[in-house]
Every structure is written in C-alpha cells, then in structure tokens.
Image: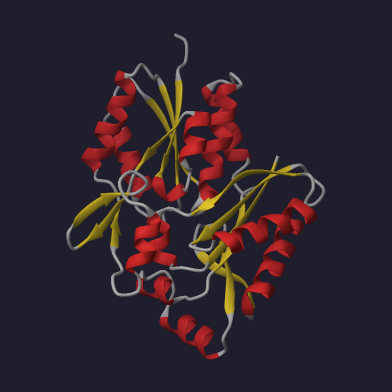
Length: 282
C-alpha cells in the first residue's frame, strides 16, 4: 500500500500559516480562555489581542480534549492519509503530547508517530517543518521517524523577555527566581534542557546585552554548519527585525525559514517584549 503521510503540530509549536501552507502541516489548536468564552489558538484569536488586554486581563490556556484530538485524527484518516507524524512541545510544559498519544491508539487505519520534542515554540515547530520537508522529498514514513530521533538535540531555541511576571503567574518559574531577577534587574536567557524543562542559560542586563548573548549562543550551536534560523518576537516586531539583521551578519550560512510573532498561547505565559532565536543545524 502506498503511504500518504501528513505532518501535524500543536499550536504551541508556533508553525505559522505561511509554513503550514508551504509544507502542508496541520495544526491542533490549544484553547485560550477569557471570561467571555474560549478561543482556538491560531484560529480565531490574534496574539495582538492578548497583548492589548494585558496587564488587566491574563487569560488561561487549556490543551485540546481527548475527543477533539480523536476527531481531528479521524478526519485525517477520512482524507485518505495512512500515516501521521505528530510533533509536540515538551510534556513538562503541556499535556497535549500525552493526549495525542492516547487518542492515536484509538484511531484505526492511521499509523501515528507521536514525537515529544522536549522543547517549546518553534524549537518544537522546526521539527514539523523538517519532517514535512522530508515528506515532500518522498522519504518513507519510518525513515522520517528515524531521522527525527537522530535530530532530537539539534534544535537550539533561546529567548529573553522584558518581564518574568507572566512566567511566574503561569507556574513556569518559581517565586525565588522571579524575585532575584527583579531585585538585580536581570534578564535571563531561557531555553529548554534535554528533558524539556526551562532553565537559565545566562543572565544579562538590558535588551542590547540580551541580543548579543543570544547571538553568541546561536553561533556556538551552529559552528560552521549550514543551518536553519528563526527569529520570534512577542509584541516587539522592531526588536525581531534587529535580531534578524544581527543573525544574518554573524551566520551567513544560515537560512531564515521563519520570522514572526509568537502565537497567543505562548504570549499568555511570556508577556510582551520577548525575543527568541532558533538555530537548527542541517
């Protein structure tokens, strides 16, 4: 039987609509919850709305339900897909990957490989682009799965933000870390460790130092290798453009595959003033 493969990601992977269309990537949205109702991340809520309602209103998020995911996967099977590669953010930061794994077991006729990236945002989403690129090149399902496992530690995403207030409120960091950072006026450079848990790469003062440190870490991760790069921002488009210019000068061998605003689900937990930089050696 001929394979018909589809690549899926959850919306916390920050795979923008342009990439979705180019690579035929389907997205499972998480929910953004305000008092007036629920919105689907990347579907019917613009992240700019979230920023406009800060700081008076900070919504909550919830992962898609088992039933929603099962229906989503059944829909792919009805479209004629035989195999699915489902890419998700770290299970330490979201329960979506476990929900998808459980739902996939209940969907006959669609062989699904569920991939826990142990990362967040486009640090996860880049694996969906990588897998979808291989699908378009005609690489078989099992070979793509094998290559994903080989690339597991190749995504290097680091970011800084103007305030840790939103990470604290979302339970992503502890009170001690938050208080120390505020007292010392420090801005931590944050990434995910090999287990998919947030950790502090470095601490800097001010956005200029933060951008320089992001660039330094990215250059170390890339070396002389050809790589994909991505710059993300949280309501800081100008800062994102500045970061991209710096990266292109420092890493001429890098191909920028995505430069955009993060999704609403990430905005909820990080607040305004975020700059993120991804390097993915090829």
